[in-house]
Length: 303
Image (cartoon, rainbow, N blue to C red; front, side):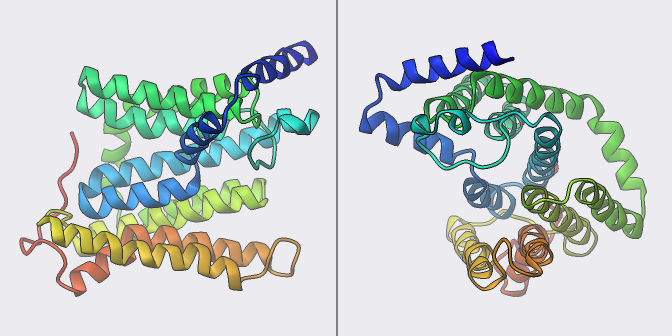
């Protein structure tokens, strides 16, 4: 393993030998496309303004992927390049390195729409983004090439497993009552959190629990339809994302910080609230403000 890591460090230094301010900015932008903040902008846009069913599936799958990624990192406990040679680190990163969460989640997030669209251009775009997001982590010195490769492989396995079991799994979930559905949405994240209670796991599992519970409530009570004129969708997005920012940044500023008493419970509350807001709170408010289609029909489900 030491030989593999040494090779990775040498490769990163060779790549950074040609770095420029423009390349730094370019690959920082691609890395941002794998950050939580990016998903907190794009996922709500899909859910509130394009297709609730598509956004719901994307959200659940990415949050499950993130949860599994944290668990695997804590099992494998592999260092990051910047832990060994801090001078090559061009971006902030914490925790273990293998597998790369940016790479793993990118495969899931961009691969699923490409599969649904089934067009060559969609796959070409998805593969390009998946590669560039992963490569940005190597360029910035926060992941070894093996971390990125591992992330791609695990992300592909998650995607293939979902596509192979989707019909049966979703049919089984639909057959359950609202009580068992909410219980399942809370229990699965809780198991991971009890096994591995750290700040990254709290973030992923709390968002998953809130988001999943909200999906159940919206499907049961709201039948939210994200269609409508452009101005209506734009207003929905702006109103909704302001609340996301308040929950994400505002609560972070007033809640206990890491190392302080009750940090983890308040972190659970913060990310659980974000997930619940995106999947249920915002659609409920949009209907209350008459910012949804007058038809009141359920959001279209992807095939």
